[in-house]
Image (cartoon, rainbow, N blue to C red; front, side, top):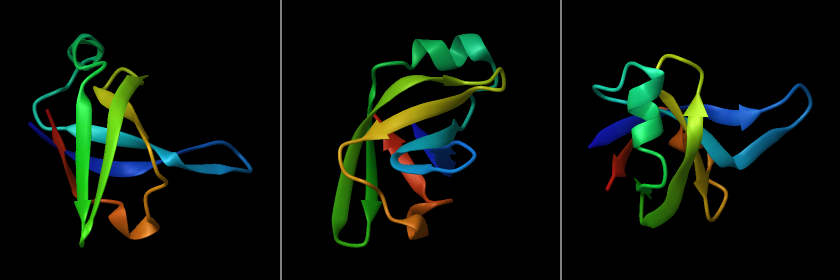
Length: 84
């Protein structure tokens, strides 16, 4: 299963580079997103591999919050991730 990193999780004055909002292909509702909670996510960026975990849903359109172990670079936005 594949998804695309849409943005970092952020507030008004702070960006958290360890949490990202991911849109998964074929997931269009809140209930579908909740079922994916707890799965592992892998981002391959150049030679680096970033691993993370789906921690919650984001809104009602099927987007997900992913917490990565290490901060991901800004160039990783709009790149594909693999969901296991």
